[in-house]
Amino acid sequence: MNWGNESAPQEFVLLGFSDRPWLEFPLFVVFLDSYILTIFGNVAIILVSRLDSKLHTPMYFFLTNLSLLDLCYTTSTVPQMLVNLRSTRKTISYGGCVAQLFMFLALGATECVLLAVMSFDRFVAICRPLHYSVVMHQRLCLQLAAASWTVGFINAVWLSALTLSLPLCGPYVIDHFLCEVPALLRLSCVDTTTNEAELFLVSVFFHLLPLTLILTSYAFIAQAILRIQSAEGRQRAFGTCGSHLIVVSLFYGTAISMYLQPPSPNSKDRGKMVSLFYGIIAPMLNPLIYTLRNKEVKEALRRLATRVFITK
Image (tube, rainbow, N blue to C red; front, side, top):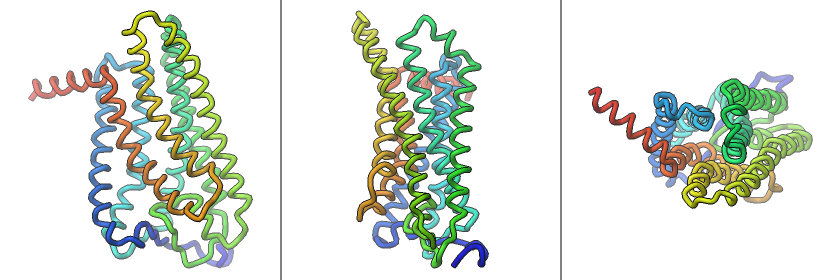
């Protein structure tokens, strides 16, 4: 069935976890709780970063962007997943599928670039502390954040157009719980080797290049920290970088395992697990990582809670 002769499909069936029906209700409870925690955690990060004047720094400006990314990503995927887990008719409209595909590509690429920008911020803060306020001025921070979002959305426009232009063969059943490029390519009636090669090249560009910049930044950061004389100074420097390194490790570890490994018989299940991590686990963990390991954020949350309590 070719889109040139037929109208576009009205909806897709998302198989999700239908091959394990006994898992659906427990997963619904877990995903709903995780989604609620993700919303509250990331909204708290955004509010405290904006309302506490002591956190009006480049580091927390970029952290606010990361929290906004996580909020957008979970909201574009998890509600549909929750609906399908409790429904016998596990479908998504064509427009909803296109929106999911676009947001997945845009926000994933944006986070790749943003994490590299955050490592540059930490590099300047630790390796060039006397020039930090001069280098990381407000205008540059806005430009770096805007560039991250712009590059991510340009990537989404390009890859979405390439994927959606392919003729698809029915039945329109996607062996996934969301609309993603590899899952949609499997529905194509034509050879997708070129599309798969393009996806691989894009993945290399958005994963390996930023990761190389991050690792280079942290190599210089580690050298600078080791030169710090006081144990307290070294501990504080490690503290400001530790949270970001954990987030980078979680994000890039799962991304590389999904997009930069050769296909295998278990690639479908692997794709589902990695997408679960992207869509639910990582956005839930990021606020916890930054709050539990960051003394400044914990103190700011305490001040904000005290202010709200006194106002009431």
